[in-house]
Figure (cartoon, rainbow, N blue to C red):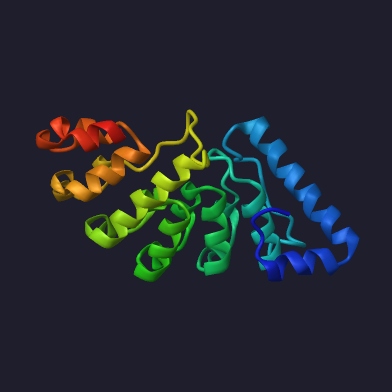
Length: 204
């Protein structure tokens, strides 16, 4: 089971076989609700499982499509659970949108999320979009992900761009250079001086 923590993965591996099948059936039901209503309005978590954090780690880890965000259906306590939300971000950064505000305003947590997927910064508290260390980390993460072909582009998915962070970074050469490595569109909104910068243009 991809993306599950070792602790949770071991619990599933050693747990009752019927638990695996029951969670898999919930996953199937969740996906079917997506296709029937497009934004999952018809999905209601099974009350037998919805109070279990293991259930939510399973669901957010296995359902990473942008249009399907199971975290939105979790109780508030699970939206504040660091392990669950980080598992969700590893599946797709967009799920951070449904996390508790306390996590989106926690610098340490946001930094950890951006190291997993730089696009998480789009859904973090605005104060971090002016935090140079976090902004640079986010673009570095996306740059590395692009090299490994892990960034997913789709109708629903937009990567972090210079327009998503404080304007002052459009004139920050290191950040612009890092940003263009992950998304060529960054060059369009960067300061004019960088549009004739040979290194930056070649890396776009």
